[in-house]
Length: 84
Image (cartoon, rainbow, N blue to C red; front, side, top):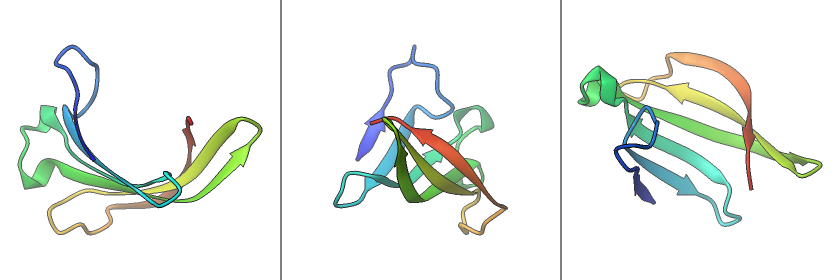
């Protein structure tokens, strides 16, 4: 799903592409960081996995990669809160 945020919405990227699995959970997010001038060098992706629920909150592990070759630059995992 390609999403274009309004100009007055605070975000690092006005246009982002979201990929969801059959259960509706975010699996991947692609974007280009606007303040870096766009282009392949400013592109990035987050790969999301190991989704789980604690109480009413959802969490997921995320790995970020940052360049046109999609090589992982930041291989650390982080827990990320994900709202319903």
